[in-house]
Structures are given as structure tokens and as C-alpha cells.
Length: 138
Image (cartoon, rainbow, N blue to C red):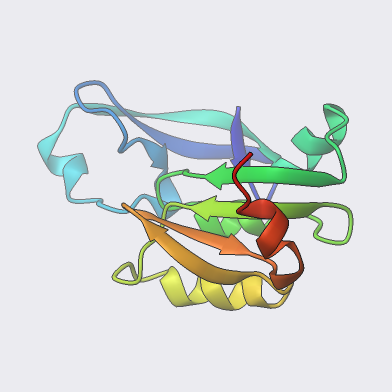
């Protein structure tokens, strides 16, 4: 099952030789790999992340969530009902040099989340109201 902003079936690129590059065909980061690597394109069922949270009775406040879906990060974030769920920290595998970075920053800023830390390939976002409690070491 794949997390997306829409439910149904989508094409998924599954690499057999390399880890970490498989993903939704429409948003895969490096389509040049399709010509260079063994892969198969399969149909997968997709579900909105918000539905996963609801079905699993997730708490309304989630301390940390990490979005790492190989180029499908914005679509995954778009599936979250931010009026139903609040996050201490949102980690997104996206850095300032990646094409979708500003779209993701702008999208999360609509809900009050600001980028506050770069950690390797990830950007961490926090709502200013939650910054102190989310970054406190226990």
C-alpha cells in the first residue's frame, strides 16, 4: 500500500537492484534510472495518509512524522487534514536544492509550519507554537 493524496491505483516503479529509488511513476525523481536499471512497473493500491491515521486511531497531536516517499512528498502532505491533526515536528526528505522544496515550504506555511533545521537530506518543520515542547530533550 502506498501513501498518496488520492486513493485508487497508481503505477509504481520497483527497482530490483537498488534500494531507496522506487516510487510512484508520476513523481519519481530520476527517470533516467529507468533506462539504466532493472525495474518493473506495477500497479499498486494507494491510500491517503489521513485515512491511515484515522483507521489507526492516531492521536490528534503527533510528536513526529517523517515523510520520505521518493518524490511524492508534496502529494503525501496534501492528503493530511491539518484541521484534524497537529504535529510537533514534520520531517520531509527534501532540501533547498530540490525542485519541489519551495512548493513544500509554501504548502506547510499555510498551516503555520516553518522550516527550522536541515538534517542530511531532510528538512524539519515545526509550528512556532510547538517549537519549545517539540525540541525539548527529556
